Image (cartoon, rainbow, N blue to C red; front, side, top):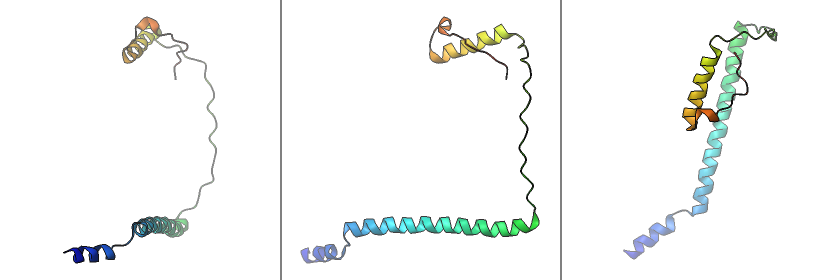
Length: 104
């Protein structure tokens, strides 16, 4: 029985070899995936490039700033927001200080 266990132990590869082979297989697999994705991108570009023309890139103009519109029921909305923040933080509503409240 002991001879059999010695034979099995003698045929096992060393731990460092298993670790190096495992890391190498994963690295080669990742490189293969990157290569396949790159190749598919080039193939798709060839087929799509023949059928469609690329439109020129235009930069949208920045919207003009409009004067601030008044918020209807501003005090009611502000009170509701403050109450929600105070409830979420577990504090008293008098501890909430509003610096700015703008309509977006």
